[in-house]
Image (tube, rainbow, N blue to C red):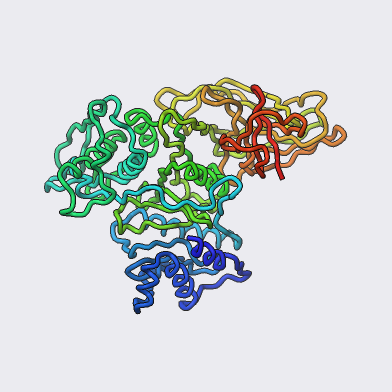
Amino acid sequence: MRKTYLLLSLLCTVTMVYAHERSIEEKLAAASTVVRSTQPAMAKANAAGQKLRIQHSSEMLTVIGNDNGFALIANDDMFNAVVGYSDNAFVLDENNSLSWFMYAAGESMKARIADGKPSYAPTAPDTERFKASIAPIVSTTWNQSKPYNDLCPKDTKGNGYPSGCVATALSQIMKHHRYPVHGYGRKSYSFSPSEGVGELLSAEFESTYYQWDSMLDNYISGQYSAEEGNAVATLMFHAGVAVEMNYTPSGSGAYSSEARNGLMKHFGYNKNISLLYRDYYSQKEWMNFIFNELSNERPVYYAGSDKQRGGHAFVIDGYDENGFVHVNWGWGADGGNGFYDIALLNPTGYSFSIGQDMLIGIALPDKDIRYEPQIVSDHTMSAAKITDALINVAVGQTVWNLSGDAWSGELGIILKGNGQEYVLAQKPVKTTPYLYNVLSNMEGALGGLLSLPSGLSDGEYRLFTASKGSPDKGWSLVRRKDGQTNSYLMDINNGKVTLNAANDDSWPSTGIKKISGSNAAGTYYDVYGRPAASSTRGIILHKQGNGIRKIVVR
């Protein structure tokens, strides 16, 4: 792993001023360096004369490898040479998830080139906050065919429908946690196939005890017992019922929101599982969520979609020092599992990335998991100074609830700085019944002309739109599309006010203040709530009574 990181780093350090297509020799050299370093067996195979070859090519990517591994190489040297690598043989047939990644990576590159953005680099983990790298933590390499789909409904020819990528991803994550002992409640739903007669699919979760010890990491035909096959088939089918899987011969699908609800309602997982949407996070903040989950040994459910290939769900269960995440595609032991630059799929302002989402906080119910609010807006925030005591604020035309649950609380316009927090305006809102994404009671402006608090001391403040609901411990940023203005920096100097638009999203935190060294007695935590020593370098949080303060240790 360390050797791979150093080699990748060398490939990633050169920034080209004038982009051009890499030559065949350059592509082979980049792939050879990565493939040879990934597994000793691969190096031996190369040494024995098994040469690397071009296995697939498209407008933006070339796949180079052999029977023991492959690398995805960017054709244009505006980008790092390596986009992904695996120690599996490259097989694209029917692997819709890997196909989706390659398509999305290519579209992202084209968007960046069209927008004239020559500088891109993967987001490497901040080693002061996260582990430098994490080897894959999910041991299973399951897929969607036999025996996994043995209990799934069958088509008119008697063939079992695929178990579905959502069920496969959830099942592998649950196998990692080996939880629950049994399910909760029961569920039935009507399944209407494209051909044949519909049927009622049901699962008795409460009375089913999942046989974790009987589930194998990989199933090979003729090498597992009926008990072992039934154990994994039961889990897969129950996961499918929990999410109301739409079974089809070409691939079975379900929504990520149903995956979240199913984990909590029928499998008893933590109530603070959060469904996050890629569009509302910067590249760095999105990757930090992933690094944090994996640093806490929690695999991430991840999904993506495009108009041509539909939706795809898979598991992220590790990362390397460059920030490439390890993906278990859910297509078996030879399904292209490997390390991929998921951060690349973020060309700000381009619509194809809308399909990306992930579930974080998939943990047992007794774990302390932070709830991540999902009150968002598709419109930019705007603010203007009228006088040094009066500002005009517009929060945007629409505000949505994307949490997947009914929500009620308040929207507010918050001014924060110098250890103080001021609510300039607020109003109660709630979701519409059966339309949880729609916030009602939005009539009437939140904002307009607002007076600033009197006696504000000189310094820097942040002005932003925020939400606060029952799960929240304080005001949380209403997130905007990546790149849109989500707040304003207000500078006060000798009573004179200056406003500047901002779109960064790594700053939101509630109740954090600076503290002098003389007041530093108490308990210390890192920014994700883990215990830390007061001498820990970087940002640590100091808890005194009911207050939380921020300390920067250099």
